[in-house]
Length: 444
Image (cartoon, rainbow, N blue to C red):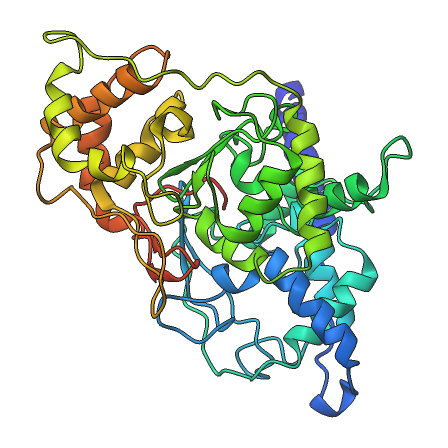
């Protein structure tokens, strides 16, 4: 009898907890608007919104390869399943044409769509929640004045119970910290502007911060480096692997141009970021550089002299491959961006994780369509895994003072096998190939 009452008590408490969670998670629908309710947008506000959309990299995520800009459909492969980006053009049927500013701002601040459904945090509202109302209004003005594209959203491919959006409210309870950006009065205006953009709309931490098993950024390791789309996003704090310390000036140049003589060329998912920032005001790009350079702090350079690798030493077998395939560019006199980088200054060769240099050797660097751009041929089709291991072992020994990479052969085989799952970006940020569903992305 007593145990029966106890059991019923537990069930009642569970039911009450469930009802409480549903009440907490429920969000109301915001009524759709008619096109006539939009009114007219100020041209200056639209231009400001265009720059903010570039900083937020909106077009890259919300455009599928070969598709109309902002019409959605890009597959974002996550450890939990595949999510497809939504149509953010002002199409009334399939896009956000029926969204009021209130609905748009709620999506940015709380990750809830117009209908009241919780959005998956592949849309990085955990950063966008910092965006000011004025900037949200400018973004809204820009998006609502784009050409409407009728493009039905593709179905996400997530297993039960992750396909139940109500559960995302629990994730938010744990990991979504809402609130306006708070300037640091001890810092200058450029630093605070850079912090606002870096931590907010630019959502740099979404790639450059490691994540936990729930797909949330590990707060205590902000900008420590992460993984995205089969690439490593390097640490952009004091743990940066760059052998030549970044400065405000070098970061500013790199973010504006997509390359720097002492730091190499933007590649992988970073290519669209620098391509977009090339269209943003110089003041905002420099502000980001001021903030990130401060996060990195002052360090001594660690670039090493080229060290001869003795015959029979580890990596000696890669020297003939390097001399035949790489030296003409990387030991040549032609400077970046069209010549090869001095590998003594390469973050990819110095990094503790060789994923990026493996990707570059296997798949090369794609050219920008219709214009002069830096390129590198892919070698995956002409040299074997064993030869790539020899080549990279040689490069690590000859151009750095770092210990040899472990399990390099295993990584080369893994990256070759998943090669057709890696998105391909040209140097101007053009996405030419999607990730297949088994590619791992650390946002969801």
